[in-house]
Image (cartoon, rainbow over all chains, first blue to last red; front, top):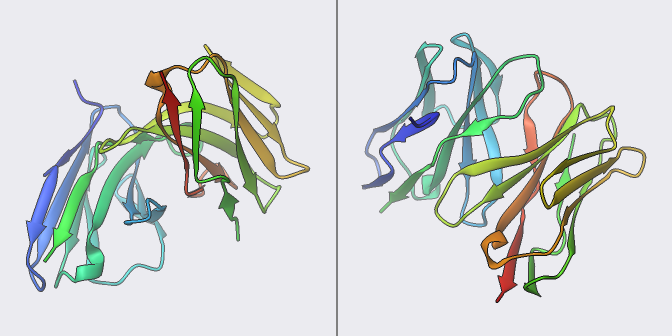
Length: 113
Length: 112
C-alpha cells in the first residue's frame, strides 16, 4: 500500500556504468520530483515533472535524464556514473498548484565505486 | 534566491523536555513552509505545513509557527520522547508551483 515507491533501494556500481532508478506513486498526484541528498545530508531538488512535462530542471549534469512515461511514474537514468554521484536519491509527488505537501519515497542509496 | 538555515545541526535533550527547533529563511515572500521528519535510512515524512497566511499549525505534541517578517519558523515539541529522535528538516516554497528549498536539518536525540 506504499504511496511512493522506489526501486532499487540500494545500488552499488562501478564508475562509468549507466543505471536507472524507478519511481511510482499511487496517490493520483500530477507532479513528481527527484531530489538528491548528499553525504552531508543536504537535500536538493533535481527535477520536477507535471503531467509528464518537465517544469523544474536545476543545474544538473546532462548525464542525468529523467523520464516520465505517465503521471504515476518518474524514472531517473544516469549515464557514465561518477564517484560524486554517490548519494541518496529521493522521489516525491504532490498535486500541482495547491502548495500541498510533497510525499516522499524511501530513497535509493547509490554508491559508485 | 531562497536560502534556508537550521541551527544548531544537532541537539540532545533528556526525555520529557519541551524544545524548540529553529528555521530561518532569506526570502520573506514565501508561499508556505513545511516541517519534515527523517529517520535514519528512511525517507521524509511531512509533519506540518504552514501557508503564508497562517501563523501556526498544530498536530498532537507538535506546533509550528511562521513569522514571515522576521524570516523565521519554529517547531515546538512538547514533552519530548525517545521516539522523537530523528532529523527535522524545514523547507520553504516561494510559489504554488515552485520548488522546495530545504535546510540541512537538525538531528535531535532524546535521551531516556
